[in-house]
Length: 139
Image 1 (spheres, rainbow, N blue to C red):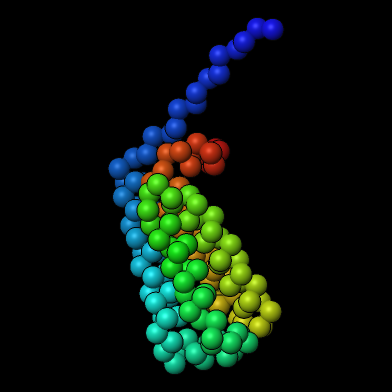
Image 2: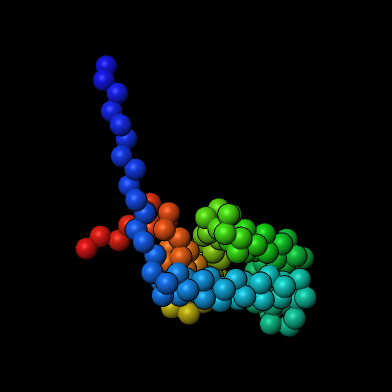
């Protein structure tokens, strides 16, 4: 059998503009998710009311906040950002399912997790050439 040399596909170059746009988007997502996670620890009236409306016991807020904090930290660290994005996708999917089952408004509350997920993956895609190679946009 003849051995063939594998070709390494070069990652698409990331422009400075895309790179910084990706980091700014990532930073905004991280700040929002950290705020959300710490809100679940502090349990202000808005969080308590939302948990009641969604039918989630407020005693679960610390666990939910800790999971969100872990996923967010993993997403914020460049070496673990891909794992963090995958875990955040799962977390946000659970949020979408919870809002859907509670009958929350579709375009605002229910799909908000989808919007955040797109923004999180978009920020990562803009700044990481390896992800661009894995998930290329085609013309």
